Each structure stands twice: as structure tokens, then as C-alpha cells.
Length: 584
Image (cartoon, rainbow, N blue to C red; front, side):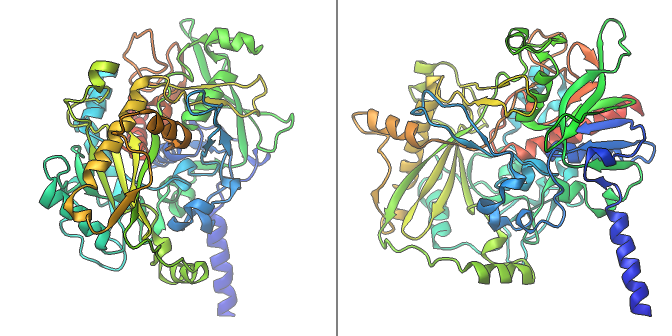
């Protein structure tokens, strides 16, 4: 009898925890919301969670993908490469004229939590100079590193790696938060021989060019660092898991609808001072069809659909470059030429060597690894990223700046290149990521059908600086691995020599094998008040209208010199502060 009552109680608790998550637009309750957040990804999860901390505020989150809760593939860090297509928009880029006409896969999270559910989990804030540049571009000191630092600590919950290994000397406890939402940690596994060789290179041989840096998230990332990840106790810490957990979902002032596709934004019909008032969203079933449902926020509509889908929704709504919209038969309601323009993305290539042993590490036993992870969240599936990363600047005496224009970095403390060190026993080396690209891509519509995927043009190497900068990155890798620490470990190089007399083989290989890091930003960027460029004012409001803000990676005016997810968390935290201060 008591067991039966307990079962009923547990079932009731589970039902309560899921009571505010609706599976289709038909099931959305007939109520009015203060705020409607369009996109339940990284930024949207943060904003909805923070706004509903105030019981006076009602929020609806609209997510095109399914719910993340209970999906094992989205919890296991080591499953990064096998996440089912259901949770991915499965986009492809336009053919790249400068990368041998190739089409690249362009993964975007199609699930509550967005790309934080499917990304590589690397946690890097970038350089303080990056955020000071945001403040300068927007004219708002609230976007500076000093102003945002407290929000970085607010969102973070630093945890020691499961298993209790000693991490003293591998991070700076002063720059982290311990009571926030997003769990961040170092990898569980202790340093191996490869890691110690890298550390030896930094501390004994090449400390001037590759100094050891205690913590990459201090605002001064330059040097060799231990990699930090959004993983807690061996589990991926996505935005939805962190900010939309069971207690938050149970809030009576928060509703979430999944499988709901935002087709366009509409005027609410309450224009003031001849400005559009955009607080209405038109929704359709994710499966398509002609069914439509419109909802109007009492206070604001907050567009947080990400660097690809935010401009897509704006353009489908008639907000963008009027010439492009007219060519597709879409009526322009606001001519904002920069919507979908000025996209930055960080290209990546590799520098690899054969090892002297030539013997790969033993293959992973998938069944045993999964059983271990299920048992205690340890083992090879508890991590994904490599343990060490180098953040470097291109040497100041390089001819690249004279040949291809001024330095694009935000300041002398900002790296140009990220080297993520790699070793599989038979092959070792590093990825080479250009953190400060000059090329700018676009997101455009394919047609006036809102269900058609957008046209994503990365425009790689349209600025010649970027190709040459990757060559400089390969030179940095070559220099690092030429230290005596590697003399008995590395053998012949596999990839092209950046210093060869003929530059063509290196350039050709780079064009053939370059990939995207999936770090798009800036497609609806902030600028200063009164600026004739950009899409948003410094408070993230869309220029020329009322009722609509954009808060996600598209809002970023200058790509941070790191992996952008950390910057998006900070931006979203400040967005919540701005919204609260405007209304309460």
C-alpha cells in the first residue's frame, strides 16, 4: 500500500516537473505572457530562467526542436560525434569559391538548449581586449571586460573533476564562479606523457613565445593552458540542463513549447512615434504545413534563435536589406541592410606529424565505456576536448600586417591563433584555428518559404589575410614541436611545410582541408546609438522599432578570441539585466 502511494507521489512530481513543457503549438495555454523568448538555445535558456526568477514576470519560450530532457546522447560528453540528426538543423554551407568549391556541414543545435547541447564544450572567454572593443564599438561601458566579469562569475559553477585528482597549478581559482548555473571543469584524466612534454616545452625551452598560463579565462589567455570545458561531474552542462532544470521548469510563470517553428515576426498594431512595434510572433508546427498561430507579448519579444536562425527570422519578417527582400517577393517593413551580413566564423586546419612509435592507442570498447559512464560518470566518455591549448599571437615582425592591412585583433593581449594539441599514439600535432578572421560571410534567404534552409556563405579567404594567418599558425605549431621535448617522439611531418620555398602546396592543402569551427557571430550585431550600421543598439533593441530585442551570438559586434559559447552566456546574462531594469 505504502509503495503504491509512493509511486503515485513520484509520478505526480514528474508530471509537475513537466507540466509547463508543451509539445506543440496547439497545446500552448490560452494566456498572455509578458515576454516571449523565440529560441530556447544558449541565450534563450539563460534569459527565460533569469526573468522568471521574479514571480511577477511571465515568460513563454518557443523552441523549434524537441526537448533535451532525458536524452542520453546529449548528456554524455564523449558522444559528441554521434549525436542523432534529430537534434541538429543539419545545415550545409554554400559552395566556397576559395576552398575548392566545397560544401561544409554546418551543425546547429535543433533542441532545447540549442548548440550548447551538441557543441565541443570548450569553455573560453577570450581576451579582455575583446570586450573592451565591444564597449568601444557600442559606446556602452557595460559591455567592457570589467563590467561583464561579475556576470561571468554569476553564470559559472566551477567544479573539480570527478575522481578527485589534484588540479592545483592548472587553473586560477580567483577568476571563476562557484554558485552559478553552468558547470565548468578540467578533464578527469591526469596529465600523460604528451601533456608533460608540452608543459616542458613551455617551461624549459620556449617560454618566451609559449609561456605557461595558469588560466585562459582570466582575460589574458596568451600561452599554454589547461583546457576547461562545460562539463560537470562527467556530464555535459548545456544551457537547458543548467538554466531550465526541473525546479525552473516547475515555475508557474514559465511555459515552454517545443516543436514550434517561428515563421515571422508581425506588427502588434500599436505603433508609436511612427516606429514599428514588433511584439507578435507567428508560429507553425515544426513538421510544416499551413497551420499558423500568433502570440503577442505584453512587454517584449526577445529573439534568441542564434547567429543563423535569428537573421533568417528577421528576413522572413521583412526586416533586412530591402533589395534582397524585394528580389524574393518579401515586403520590406524595415530596411536594415546589415541583417545577415558581417558574419565572422573561425576557420580551422591542422599540423600533424607521425610519431616515432607509429602505434595508435588501443581502440575504445564502446560498450565498456558506456557501462562505466552509466555507473559513475567517469572514463573515456566523460570528456571530449584535448587537455591543453596554446593561445598565440602572430609575431609582430611578420610581414602579414604590412601586406594585408592592420592587425584585426582587439589588442595586444588578444591571440590570433589557437592551437589545440592532439595525440593518438601514431599521429600527433595540433589543430590551427584562426581566431581573428577578416573575411565576412552572410546568411541570406533561399526563397520566401520560411521552411527553406537559409543560404550560409562563410566567404572563407575572401580576405587574403586569413589564408596567410593560417600559414603563420602552422609556423607557430612547427616552432612549438621543434623543441627538444619532442625530438624522440615526433618523426616526419604529414602536413605541408608552411616555410617551403613554393607556398602553393601549403595554400592548396589549406583550401582543400580547412573546416569550420561552427563559431558564427555578428549577423545582427550591436553598434552605437545613432549609428547607420549594425542592427541593434547597445541595449540589444532592434533599431527603428520598439518591442523587439535580439540576444544571442548574432548580437556580438566582434568575435571573441576563443570559443563563443562563454561570450554568449555573458551576453545573455546582461540581456536579462537590461530587460529587468527597463521594466521593473
